[in-house]
Length: 85
Length: 153
Image (cartoon, rainbow over all chains, first blue to last red):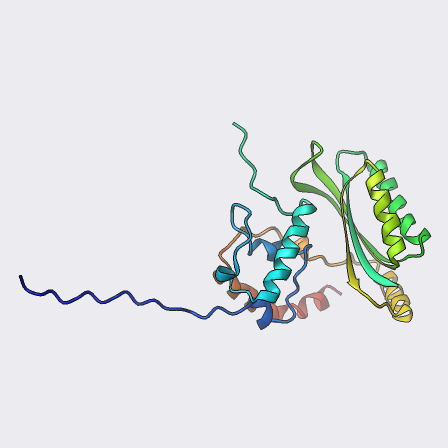
């Protein structure tokens, strides 16, 4: 059997994520700003980890805090509504 | 004196006069407990993200004030007593308050009372998007931000 050339390994591009809040210092993190916070939660209402969101540790802590505050005030759901059957 | 921000949610199923009296009561508590009310922002009736005490609507009120820890303690004690309040949250915005600057701010607020205060919540809620994709529009929108408030005035 002829030796098949080994398939090239898939290249992984590690794109360096930068913290959005560090890039733009004016971008506030606030529990009242639901639209911004929505970008950091999944459809299931979970907080997106730092590994994926690319936030730096400091800003991730603030985002997390803001999300939890917004949840308390019922601005953001803890979990999506289950359709009534 | 510290600067605080307090949001309280009045049960949205109550008639308007009940809601009104709840707002007056709590803004009154702030003033009577040595606090200085800087701004009172009513977001109005909003749909709650989940049911609270069987209701799905809440009337949100945001009070921006300066006061002491005593003010906050008394305010929160009353929130807990009052059945009309379904949720509340008080956050500290700064530790030191310059009273003169505060008075100037109140005066400025009173002057600008005619146009309603621009709220970031005004925009319709955006569906949860992957943060990487979402990053681009936000960055693009950033330069517009300083221009936007100027336009409204």
